[in-house]
Image (cartoon, rainbow, N blue to C red; front, top):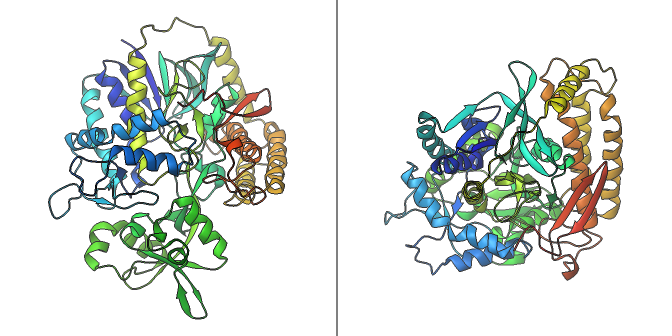
Length: 544
């Protein structure tokens, strides 16, 4: 029986786990927290699918075209076709697993409009679609757990891959209980660790998704892709600890963006882009709000009370709890915030990375979204990618030979202990704060050569002191040693953005405002002993 180690237990992780178990493989599902605490439960808007009973003339081909166009035509058509073709099957699988979707007056699964889409195809479950998907997939996994095909390992963190000669043999795991590193050998490893929110401090996402795993694997030889494409969600509100998402569903149901000028409301998106202006793609909406140069508001107060209570209850509750706003009477002050990462580990169509037997799924894998993700496609991609990776692993005949990593494990454990002996005026928390300030200042919605070069200089400095900083013994060592991978990933993001001398999707360069054919390819970045080598994927190694 093949052994599969899955790092991360959000939607992508549990989808992969269930799919591996269905194919008769044994799974270790590893994460620091239960699935119910993953970022996936925060997804409110919905999941895209063209269903057989649609009555708008929608088609799978139209979903494919919208996805490719939204990503500015640098995602692979074959991969996107597989994603969209499987959407209805995924919806039916979720229903069979116990998920209850919202229904329209005719009893069909309800669908609503999301930005950049030609038809209403975003299926949803009230205002908590992600939460309901997690619950359905967790229950599906429970059955396999009872059969001994899935073992959950909580309070554990990824430290590094067990990689030799371009092949992954498992991973070195940090055990929070014993505060030691332990090897876990497997025939395949699936990384499902989400995006890199913590690099930017306050975002709409969970700081559990800190980018460390991708950064560490990058330093171990994995190729990264499209890191410059960072989606800013156009509508968020600020709280003490993070940015709270005001779901695109609010605009899909008829919410209107405006600013005030001379005492009058200016519905700037509608004036510039027509009646559907509020549902322009997220990169366009975020830039327009940012460029307005004044407070922008989202108004849903004109919607019928039933719509707000049944379809926008989460937006209502978030605004009431965190901002004291009654959205049935008052507009919502909104601003863009880092929300989703189109870039991540470069994967082939079977979701294998550049390292054999190492796979990546969900947001940490760069494949379906190109330069900009359509709302509603992330949940679809998370589920679909897990099934694709599981199928690919099951079709591999060979199992791994035994490899001896004892020397490496002993060395890494010694490093872990020695961290506590370091003395410096720069604590890890301070370095992380400086990194977040650097990323926000230099890799924002609008960038240029000067800001990106400045960001690279700043991260190079932080990297240069990373081995001499003060490691805080009051926190888990994971939060100390993970700084190296985060810094490497932040530096790589800046390098990718600087190398792409054009504006495309979520990358907007004020010094190169046009999109050009020269850059109509994905960006790849390789790490070589401290060097960051960027190239364009002209041979389309990772997409077809």
